[in-house]
Length: 399
Length: 118
Image (tube, rainbow over all chains, first blue to last red; front, side, top):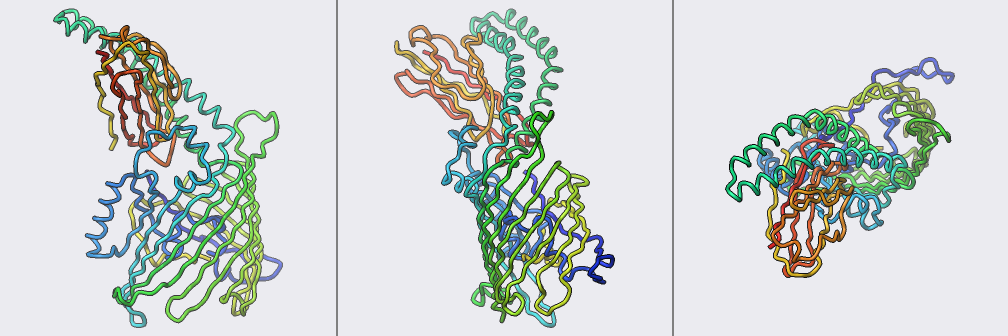
């Protein structure tokens, strides 16, 4: 399974033409990214302010053990730059879990099947002003409700079963020949067995083309079903929490809890295709609510911040999305201890699988020191990366 | 790396009780089960197979049951696949679980199991 992390990279900031007369880009452009309201997939990375370009996602207990062993060996102790995201339920096989069981999960079953643990470590070398430090982030995430199957799932399933039936039927003659060959050999009729074997080879070559064609069609539908699993509709509720522990000077006894936080994200998705429309329905409306709290205890800091709000997202096609979000922020690091609001509209356009162009406009939170609150931003998201690397210079504020 | 399931061969003693076959495709995957007796197709079904009556044990003795299951990787959360067989009506339990794993998302595997009734 290939992992992929999104790296935020603003390419242009446009503010000068606004009616408010703002002259400079947003002070904290990372505060208005398109995925801002989602519960982080790997909360440990989010809270560590780290942007791993890739993450180890072992699919078996053996792979997990080997990954950890390798990471500890390379780090000569606690791994210094490591990212791991693992869903324990899927580390082993579940022979009794049918496709229908998977989609008819109860709340406890959903919790167990989606419970994921993320671990990340990052080290900073000593500078003139700060000692060396290793930070360890630990996070967990789970879905309480995973949504209902996409309405197109049944049609895709039927299509797949029709193709697979056709594939399986290509074996019938070969199976019969195989049985007759075994029987002939058991009875010592080698000449007959060889004749049958030759017939089997001819049959194999004759069916090679249809087999390849059907396999390609089946694979396309399989991938479509996998994609539909991620496009469920109805209620989806995700929960996450994480904690970051600092080890100043890499001394275990000096460890301190640097940050902790939790996220609750209920969301509801509906399909909004018009009745009788031909083709596949891809247009969706999402109503996403968010509640999150992050406490920062690093050094002398005793800040905390909470956000409550929501986002309305309309996605008429897979490539294009329009959304509006409203967030209320409070906490001891908000403006003078008072809350402030953010109301922003965001446009997103997927240029390629790994590149998303986005623009946002609206009002940002009140900065503690005062200043501009206009958000007017154009940027690109790049998705890439395969190796587990955490670059602390590419940090992204979690709030 | 893909784990191709080795063929399963098992001998199942039978008496005169009705013998039934149950096949479950696990790990949340989807597939088609084909059941052959002495190389002749008995049935082919999409998804699992529950309590298929094969016949009385005495009529099955000396014959070979072949279960061939073509499984699709339809879940992105796992590349594992498994097929479980249970043959009921035998004096001693007869059945196994067959595991495999695909390399690439959306791939397929064929699981072959042979049961000789004695």
